[in-house]
Every structure is written in C-alpha cells, then in structure tokens.
Length: 118
Figure 1 (tube, rainbow, N blue to C red):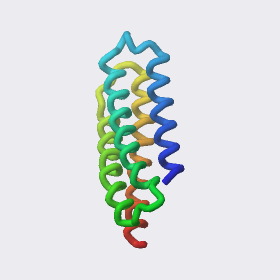
Figure 2: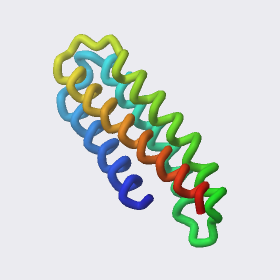
Figure 3: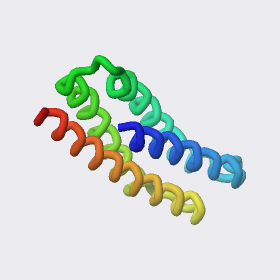
Figure 4: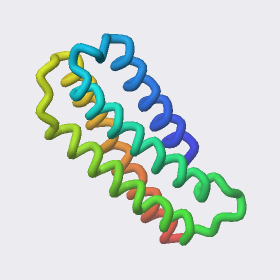
C-alpha cells in the first residue's frame, strides 16, 4: 500500500505544481477543475492511509478503507476524462491525471480483494 500511496501523493503534487507553474490565472476555472479533483482524491488517500498504514489494522479494516478510496479514484478518473477543457496543456494534465486515478482505483480494488482473502 505504501507504494500506491507514495505514487498517488507524488502524482497529485506534480499535477498541482504543473498547473500552478503554467499561469492558471488565464484559465482559472479549468485549472480549478483539475486541482480540486486531485485535492479531493488526495484527502481520501490520506484518510485511507490512516487505516492501511496502521500496524494493528486487520485485513477487513484495510479492505473497508480501500473500497471507498477505489470508488473515489475511479470517479475522479472518469470525471477528469469527461471534463470539457479548452487549454491544451490543462487537457494533457487532466488526461494524465485521469489515467493515474483509474490506475490507483484498479490497484486499490485489487488490494481490497486481496485483503478480504486473508
């Protein structure tokens, strides 16, 4: 779980940094769409890590924590993929964030399934 958490956190930082570095004031609402989506997913990841990172967590607790995160990551990925963006750089970042969010969703779902089998 630590590798997925590290990847998710690192990716969110890169996305936000990229958007801030390109001058979001020109297309504020589009930047806000991507940033708010990734920030919300980052908050869910943080909540999930509280359970998955605890040494005394039981497998069913881990699975129960991962399921909502997986659903949120899928929702974020789907939402970013459908976002109607006009700035090419923001479109590219949103597409990459969508792919990463969907990969996180798949990994979290698999880990939840594995935890339930323990």
